[in-house]
Length: 82
Image 1 (tube, one colour):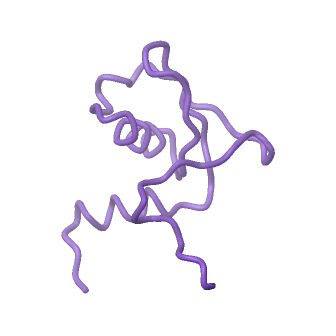
Image 2 (cartoon, rainbow, N blue to C red; image 1 turned 30 degrees about the vertical axis):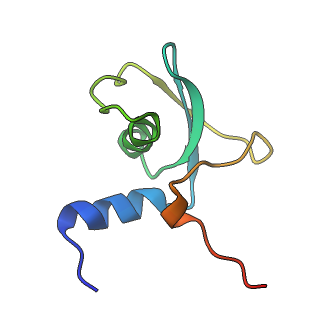
């Protein structure tokens, strides 16, 4: 299957193994997959349904393993075999 460059970038962002916590005064906080601060902002913006330019003043922090679950769009959750 071939993806457009935009689709491929989105897939890479959401399937990253590292995580970051994005904190914004208006939207709150969320833990998202990330490979950089920019990718964390882009994922958080998509989760909050806004553009990353509107939340560029958000804080991006490292996440401890026990800090909480990572949120992803439903198409990026792995299906479990019964």
